[in-house]
Amino acid sequence: MENSQSNQKEKIICTCTGTTEEKVKQLIAKGANNLDKIASATGASTGCGSCDVLIEELLEK
Image (cartoon, rainbow, N blue to C red; front, side, top):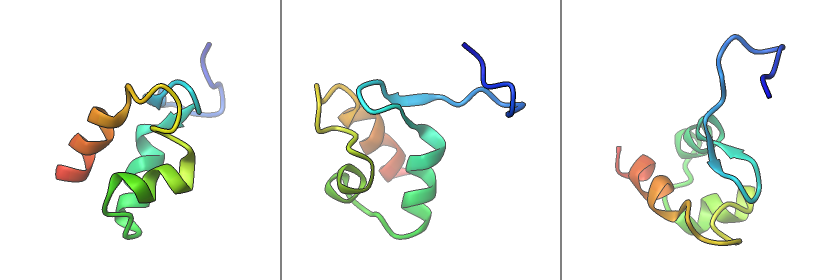
């Protein structure tokens, strides 16, 4: 399924909530500097938890 309104495919970080990599990067840029803040803003990492590692990697960059 492609989003026809976007030229880029959005990489989903959290399949449970549909949180995208771009959304996580935006939150980090706005000061969300740990997993708990990302989780509070998006719900990511509050389901199965498999996205924790991916979010932590983005936080380290």
